[in-house]
Amino acid sequence: MTKTLRIVVDTYTFIARLETELAPQSCEAFQQLLPFHNKIIQARWSGEAAWIPLGDLKTGVGFENHTSHPSPGELLLYPGGFSETEILFPYGHTLFASKMGQLAGNHFLTIISGHEQLKALGHKILWEGAQEIAFVEDNCDFIPL
Image (cartoon, rainbow, N blue to C red; front, side):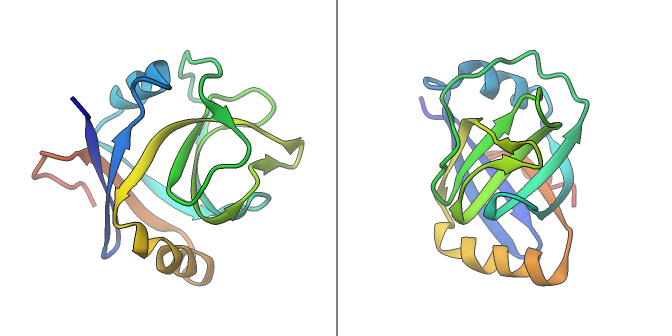
């Protein structure tokens, strides 16, 4: 059975599939954080992507299903190492990187509904700055924004 999450940023709502077969450890680690509420900001080095800095959060996850070239709507969990732990949220052309150079993150979530809103979300984050973001189980009525 496919497990999905609802992602809400301002007026934008997305449904995302957890990639449990390809990135089981990353999915499990992230599900432990639900409901997850944070800020999403424009990525500095990765192109058309936003990111959620997680600082020194220890996920206990290594690399699995990792990539440097996610497509729009393929969210990555970077478990830390060369840069801080983070979630990358690509909304357009992306090459995942930090000031240390190219990185690879674990593709653990894929947007399956709301894909047509990605460019508008990216424009909002780029021009209006940090936005509140919430990840909840898709069947959850509570959205902590």
